[in-house]
Structure formats: C-alpha cells, structure tokens
Length: 106
Image (cartoon, rainbow, N blue to C red; front, side, top):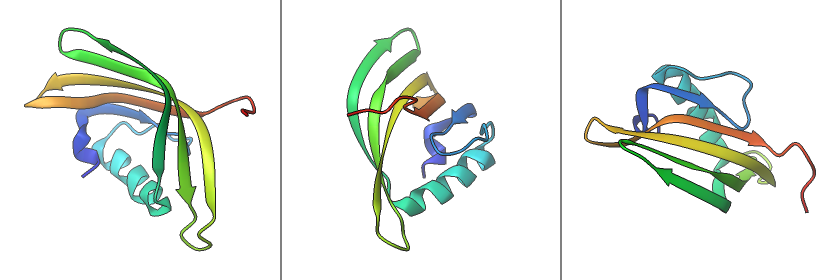
C-alpha cells in the first residue's frame, strides 16, 4: 500500500536506513521493516510549495517508534523533504528524504 504512493522512478532516503531506495522493491523492503515499529508521525514544522505538476513539503517531524518486542517507545526527531509529481491519475511521491536531527533538541 505504501509503495503505491511513490512514482515508479522515486528515490527514498529514509530516516532509519543508510541505503538509498531507488526501486519499488527497495522502497517496499524498507517499509515492511519500518512499519513493524508502528510509527506515528507528528509534523512539527512545515513549508509547502506548489508548481506546475510538482509540489514540495519540507520541515521537521517527530516519529514515535514502538519496539514490537518490548513495547518501548522511542521518539525520533527528524527533518524531512517530500517532492511530489502529478501524473498517473494523481499526486505521487517522487522523492522523500528524512534524516534524524544532527543536534540535540529540547
């Protein structure tokens, strides 16, 4: 289901993976593992831009991850950028980059 949100030529640079995902199979592989942690994202800041058949949303978010074995919740502070392309009947994610904040946050 998540993989279908991406364009066929999408790039995923994920928060908790060092591997760039540049194929549908790679994106699916990441999310199968990631979703086991029951992620819940909260947008902290957001800036959007809209152009002709392209849009972006960038900002910061907090992702709560629950360890499926211990039920321990870890909050990951991160920054994100989404680039969307319009085509194939709707808006799809063309590029997604999310990385943990490099400095401690309060």
